[in-house]
Length: 105
Length: 469
Image (cartoon, rainbow over all chains, first blue to last red; front, side):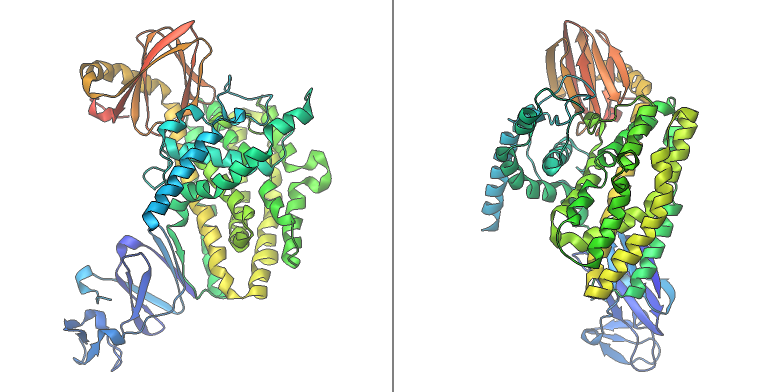
């Protein structure tokens, strides 16, 4: 278990934890949206894929995944102003994303 | 329908604040320090009719209206605390005058609105999700405490490096006094009720604070010794005028979460955070006081807390928080974290406010020099500046307050004793002036038979100056 801490201004970004890719972004009201962006085919990072209509094309094998099928992760978190903390089991790495790279929620 | 109702609420609230201003104990007092009247809480009620008591925001958190409401909340929420003077020729009459049903009824109506207006900007910024487990909470808490106890305290270095460290150290002690003299009185609200093992765990912390009934060991008595060792008044709220907004805000939060039993788990979080960070803070204060005052100062209060809060840190976590989670489930963890985060955020705000006030006081001479520098330009542009003209008699005291922008105070006739903060004054004669920095606590006292002076609302001194402080 690791508590990852960051400034909300840094959102969105990608976290690898538990062998999966999690995209963390913020809703307009400030709540966190933590999406499992791991391709169901061979586990590729969909955040690095291409948007095609309402789907994302995986950069590894080109499989399309509907955005509405992305599962929301149930991680405990807190937000205090701009400071955010998320409890992540098996946290591995954090990868910055350009806003344009993030999958719209 | 919401908006008209909100407007009606606002109008009713404004009217209640005006009624509050009619009570004698909130009127202006005659001196900077109140050594006799333990109930006086000057709120500058003469200004209420000019104020719109709207919700405080991040941007307005140190403004005049926010400060007024925070002061009012402290005054009202302590109406269930008994304060007694050392002596009184008519104690029963004094009690009936200062504690009474009309004031309690008014307070009951105003307190929730004042809490919402003054604390909402902090509480609304905190969101805690569901899904916390005991394991993730333990990790979060360990990180939080390690971070807090490892952080440098800016106000300590500001005091050590000041031109008059003793004066500024006393300002720090005044901020402590609001809570340390009626020590643990808010905690005592949770001595009441019937709620199992954790009630006794709270009580074990409380009996330490109360010295197990041995008066000389009561923590507030230890703090009084600290104050008296450096010739400071030791009665509660003697230094009401020198409490900063954020000091009261933080204290009010602990009142709120003990006043409302539905916030019991939030309180458990907040007090656990406080007890786990206080020991390290007190160690720093003890060293600071010894650096400033040498062997003269009695630091027994702080050293006692270095010791006992080592125990309270463990007791609050292991005997309050974790048993409460075991008993009621992990669903209460967000409430506990909310208390921790709110208490921590309020401490940050308090430290920021105090550091700014210490800097303002330390630079008192610089703000007088700056005033002389900008006065010609401000007077040349006088038609564009809102100006308050004052003509006051000898002894007229402007209860300490702050402004929402920079102001230029210019004395035209007589002598005005300008107060930059506790025990720090500049006597301004005719033609002399001072810049009053936005949001900084200050006051004034007329020393001459009469004094005519002007307050120019310049907004930003930088617009008139060739340099910055």
